[in-house]
Image 1 (spheres, helix red, strand yellow):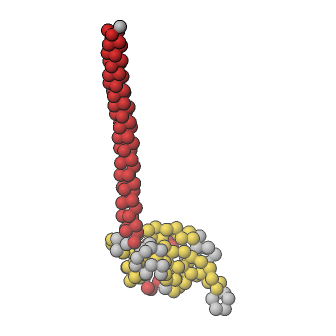
Image 2 (cartoon, one colour):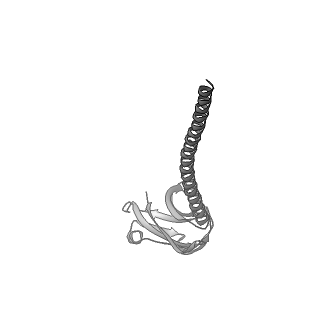
Length: 173
């Protein structure tokens, strides 16, 4: 009987030992799987953070460049003189965030259009400078035979570099 009890004790000890080894191996395998998943998630997070950092850096560079740029545009509008007669004006303005210098404009089609005459203000071009949100106005006479749209090329200099330009279709109506 003692022999049987001893054998049972040994069997229980062996099963306990084998069960412990099994639990250890199983637990280690699960931990390794979790670690692999965590590593993959960390790689993904690192990649996303890198993309976010690149985006923020690019946006910061664009904002710095934008602060150094003037943006010259124009529009034509109808108003009235002191007597109530309709008159036309072309407003050239700086829509940018810094001063524009040596501002000028050219238009082949406007120069050839006999139905549009710029009567006042043309002599100030090239304009030495124009502050942000600043503008100058040119007086215009429109005849019924004028073309309604002209492509105007504005050129200027600013803090971001020399010889900046923009072409704009200006509507004369």
